[in-house]
Amino acid sequence: MSNRPHKPIRRFDIFAEYRKQDEQANGMRVDEAKGYGLWVAKVVAARKFGRMRERGTTPVEAKNRRRRKWHVLSGERQTDKLFDHEIVERMGAEFYRDTFEPAVREARAQGQSYEAIRDRLRRRWKPAACD
Image 1 (cartoon, rainbow, N blue to C red):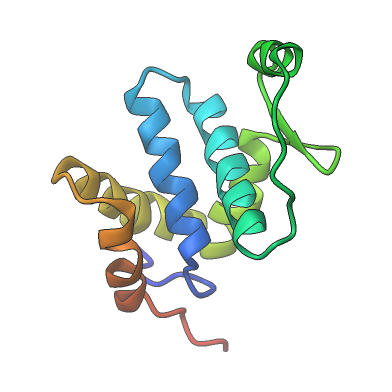
Image 2 (spheres, rainbow, N blue to C red):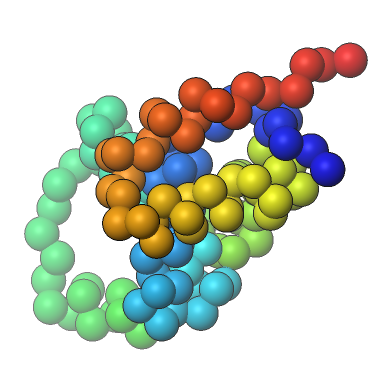
């Protein structure tokens, strides 16, 4: 069992997982929740760092967006497989399954906000040393 991630855990990783779990709790299927968590984390990061302009959404755009299973950013569908590649594989599937996902789930169950957990959780997870 690996209790250490392959790479440093980013705020982005925690935010994407937190939002994924929010959507699952609201009844969204796991695959869609993964895609949504990844998409919203990228949108928030892009806005924070000025890489995405705020723009209004027309009613037609909003209606079309609701019909699609996956959100699209820069022409790329934000899917469950992309979530697994960009987040799970980066930290290691075993670490994600056995340590990361349950820790975020437990914090949410205790009513802790993303802001309350993002740095506290990251501090205790140092990457495994490269051999």
